[in-house]
Structures are given as C-alpha cells and as structure tokens.
Length: 356
Image 1 (spheres, rainbow, N blue to C red):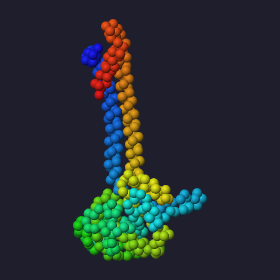
Image 2: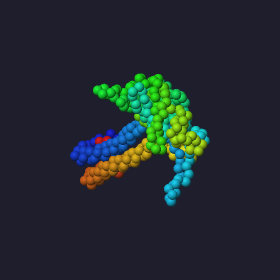
Image 3: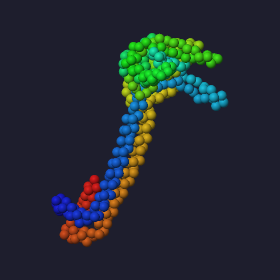
Image 4: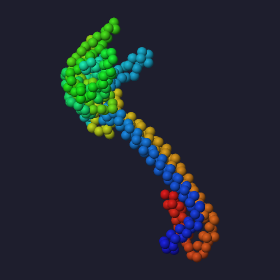
C-alpha cells in the first residue's frame, strides 16, 4: 500500500464518521485552547504586574538602615546595633556592582518654605553627595548640584505652597510653577519645641537652585540640602553635636550597576549585619507568585488536554471494535499488521490535526 493509498483511505474513513470525528476534534480544540489561554493569561498577568511595579521606584537603588540584634526577652533591650559609619560606607562601596553609596539624614524637627506670602514644603533631607544625579534623579529645571546656601526641591513642592493668611475677600492664590521658583530667594523656617513646649523658630535664607523631575516616589515631596547643613540643623534641634562615629548615619542609599545585581548586593549588605531593601526583591516575590499561578493554570489546561487525548483513544478503541470485519477484509486482501496499524494511527493523527 503506497502512501497516497494510505492517505486516501484515512480521509475516506474519517469522512464516513463525521459526527464522531467532529465531537472528538472539538474535545481536542477545547483542551488545546485551554492550555494555551491559561498559560498565556498567567504570562500576561506576570508581565503586567512587573511593568506596573516597575514604577514604584528606582530598581537599581537599595535602601540601607542600621542592623539591630535580637531584643532581650526580659528587658526588651536590643543587644547590639550595627551603626552605619564611614567605615560601613567604604565596606559597602567595595562590593562588586556598587556604583555609589550616599549617606543621608532627616531633619529631626519640622520645617517649611516661605515664598513671598506662601508657605508649604515637605520633608527636609540632608544628602551626602555633591550631585543628586548620583541618586538617579533628573532635573526638571535648574541644577542638581548640592551646594551650601541652596536647596533643591521635588516636583510636588510647588503645589504645596498656599497663603496661610488670606485677606478678606481675596480669592484663593494659585500655587507657583517650577519656573516661578527656580533661582528664587526663599526662607527655610526650622521649628523645634523646648522642654516646656514653647515653639522655637529659626529662619535661613536660601536659593532654590533646582527642581527635580517627577519621580513618582519620595523625592517628589523632598527638599534636599547638603549633609553638612543638616548636621547643623539637627544640632540646633537636639542641642547635641552630631556624632557620626558613635551614632552613624540613619540611612544609606546604594546604587548598583543594573537591576539584576540589586538583590545579590542587598543580600551581601544584610550578611554584613545591616538592614537592606530594594524594590527588586518585592518584584521578585510577585514574579514567584505569578510563576506558581502559571503552573496551576498550565496544570488545569494539561488536564483538559489529557481528557481530549482520552477521548481520541476512546473513539479509536470503539472504531476498532466496530470494524473487526473491515480489518479482516484488509488482512484477507494482503494487508500487513503494520499497514492496518498505520490506518488507525493515521485516523488518530487526523483527529488531532483537526483539533489543532
């Protein structure tokens, strides 16, 4: 029996049993579609989550805090603290893949900007770098160079400015734009409270030297000053000089060469005894969840495909039982067992092909 004869015979046999072949093929279509759609859904959900979470922050940035030992069950006191000293900065900077280690410190009182009659602002942060571009930030206007006597503000700071003492009948004052504030002389007011609850203020004249482009993160509501200036501000608030050798820095920002290194570098920092967090670790956890979801979806689709395969096997088994006389005639005219088997395997393959 030639291949053409075999192919023709298979097509004729399938054509004689249109209803059974169609129902079996529909089962295969459902099984195939189920596994493709469910796995595609899992992949799509994972990619969408990764793209959405990519906006939660710079994925090459690692936040580092001092490490704390286990608290004493009796007293609740922490046994030891791994402070972020200048030596810590040097040790972290020596880790392969680290491009920058930047100390920073928050103002321990309260402060706000005064621009003409308007007041507002956000958190005040002292930064230990000479240029905010080292943090991965970009300038909307002006310069990101951190200099004494100047302040760099986030993109949302202008919108926070308002008139705290509006005149009777005066309409609401529109907040200034970034263009209105660049290179403008403003007053930074620092506020602390004495032991008897009295409010004490200190004013500093500064120039807005730059406005940061929108980052959709903490920098949007932050006002940056040199770390040396922040040391003076916090000394004024606490009445004690800032001792970095004893107390270290409250926070470091570590930049790495690419996001693939972020988790590895964060793990090495934690092995050194410090706390470290990178958005990449959060995204990796979410990706792991969606990988499990893909496996579950794939398993459900595989079950549907297995049911379809069982349907083909059942159809062919019934066909063999119903066609014993036909098989006998084929053997009588000289067909070999291999040729008879080829006919039924070809019909099974044909049903599978029709089902996709």
